[in-house]
Structure formats: structure tokens, C-alpha cells
Image (tube, rainbow, N blue to C red; front, side, top):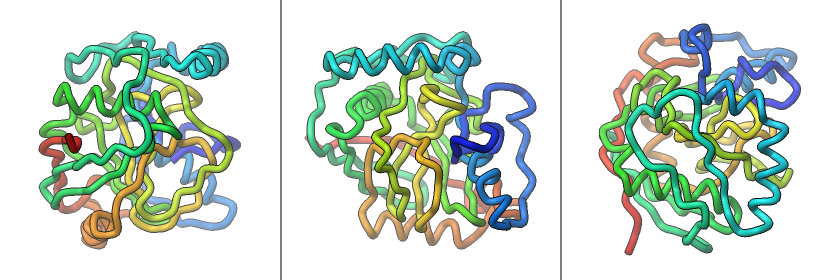
Length: 251
């Protein structure tokens, strides 16, 4: 997961180049090194265009949010699956109940469309287009920060939907167990990759929080994480493969 001060290459990012797609080595955590690890972990793929224009897109996003609309500019790279960009005007309001069905069990999620309308709008659009179906959760971290990262159909950490959108941050973000938040590769580079926090984690306020898992679902992810990564390191693919079979919402 990304931190504002340390280098973005260390975050829960959406990987945007070949070097970032390689597995990251496990790090021995110290107070000095923790911030660097946190930035490394929460990256998700984003286009270099979105990263390079982050300042501009942030300003246009603020204007769009004030007008009740969202902006989803196309990335320079095609999407991992062919999907349409979401409608610019979000329809969902308040709390939206959703179920992320996985091979490890169903995860009951409450999406917060008031807090993050553009993020929830994108998530619901991708779910309706079956973008997440048969997609592996490609990354698990078990040291320092505690997350399961999903949402990339390629399973590499480099895939996205072919568009990006701006952060929805208000400075009050926290990442306790059960948090559902977006991965990114820098300011305003959100796409499809998201992460679930299965144990309280201290992260920089760089990741848009857009929902919450219930207690049972959080425990499901924690039990999965207890089995470790496939390499035995603190950062890697889950030892027990996790596949999202579908994402549905309550009618």
C-alpha cells in the first residue's frame, strides 16, 4: 500500500512497468523501513499517462465531484478484459451490499457510495460486466501490513480495466481490519485492483476507502492469510490460491 512520502515503487500499487511486475523480496521490518514497505505493497497497474498527469486529473476530478459526475479517462494500455468505462454520473447512494464470491468463501461487503461515489460506481460497473469473474487474488502480505490484493484478471499485478480515475480521499482514512480500499500506482491512478485489510494496518492516507467487510468475511481472509504465501516470504501470492468467481449486489 502506498505512502505519500516514500517512493511509490514500494506501495500497494498498480504496476506500470516491467520492473514493477517482478515479485518484491520480503523485507525485515524496522521502524525506518516500514514506510518503504508499505508503499511497495499497495500498487496496482496504471498507465504512465495517468501517473504523469496526476496533478491535472486531480483538479478536474475535484470539479467533476462537485458537479456530481465522475471522469474515467482511457489508459494508454488496453484493459485486461474488454469492458466499457462506467457512466459518468453515479447512480448508487448510501450503503450498497455486495457479495464477493471466492474459492475461499463468500465475502460480504458493504460499499460506501457516499464516501467514494466514483470508486463505487466503477466497482459496480466492473462487477456488472463480469470483469472480476474467474480472477485470482494475486498478492498477500503478512508482515507489517496485512492485506489481500485482488482485481487483476491477469493475476500479475499489472492488469487494469483500460481506464483510470481519481482518488477520493478526505484525510480521515484509516485501515483497520475489514477495510476495502483501492490499490494504485500514484495519485489518481485507480483502476480495478483493490485490497482487503484482514488485520489492523498502519498505512499512509493514499488509498481510497470504499467499503467494509463484515466480521465473518474478515476472518475468512485472515484464516487464508494464516496459511502464508507460496514462497514463504511476507509478500507474495497466497499459498492457497484464491479465485473470485463473481461479484453480485443485493437487489
